[in-house]
Length: 332
Ligand SMILES: NC(=O)c1ccc[n+]([C@@H]2O[C@H](COP(=O)([O-])OP(=O)(O)OC[C@H]3O[C@@H](n4cnc5c(N)ncnc54)[C@H](O)[C@@H]3O)[C@@H](O)[C@H]2O)c1
Image 1 (cartoon, helix red, strand yellow):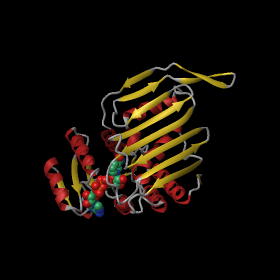
Image 2: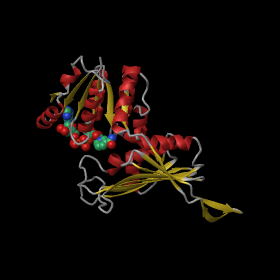
Image 3: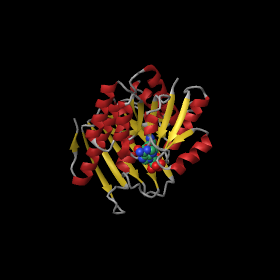
Image 4: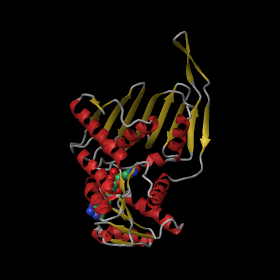
């Protein structure tokens, strides 16, 4: 019997609850509860999904019917909640960022080791079907040597007050670029930021990641109205390029174009063709939660485990430091 609970049913946690409810109906789990400190919020979602709710997460810690939890509360609370749940025998999926502090992230990794609990971090885009397809093709050498990775996450919204775009959005690029290149960290990283609303959190940032031959460029903003909502990734290789539109998980775009070099000099563009690889329908969050459940059942260490979450916190802190000081940060 596998009982799941979602702690935090705000903007993102309600999606965890909705997807687990689907997985409950499909027989992948045996029970589901939700928890939010805001009782109105918890009650409304509990009525629409027809699942039991609590307002005190301590009730779930004592609940023997719950073996695993999704922690989808504000990021600064992840450490305390993650630690308590693991130490009382529950497996945890903590939303990204794992924490907003390197020492806290390290302690969560240690707690997972000490307790033998599963600690998975919600780096959603690793479970995105088009990213998986892209990774497969990069590993097979189809794009040649990777030269550039370019990520954009642009929309127009009231900036969050609990974190800026580096932790909220850039963390995806920090993790994904390393994943796609099979490295733990870029060699060095630099970032710049804008804080237009005086809240001490950046609402726009650009992050540059130097991987040696390959370079990564990420642009994150909550102040760009021109594109409605744009979230994409372009990977440029010596043999071709690929583009993922994160809002369209059902396709990967491939471009055959490359620069022809003659006698050491770039002279023209060749093979200017585009192919669209159609992928079977799969919601990235459902892929992620299904995978978490499979790790809980099989006791397999997740692809996005605590160590992956810790590395992305180290990189986010390095980006914030670089944006503050104006100097690049060397990474291990
Ligand atoms: N993976 C993704 O793509 C993605 C997307 C959005 C948000 N997130 C992450 O999800 C987390 C939550 O973000 P959000 O936008 O949903 O925030 P939110 O503020 O909309 O929701 C947080 C909820 O947690 C509840 N809460 C706070 N402390 C609690 C506690 N101790 N016990 C029970 N409930 C508690 C609040 O009442 C609120 O309803 C953040 O860490 C964020 O970075 C991830």
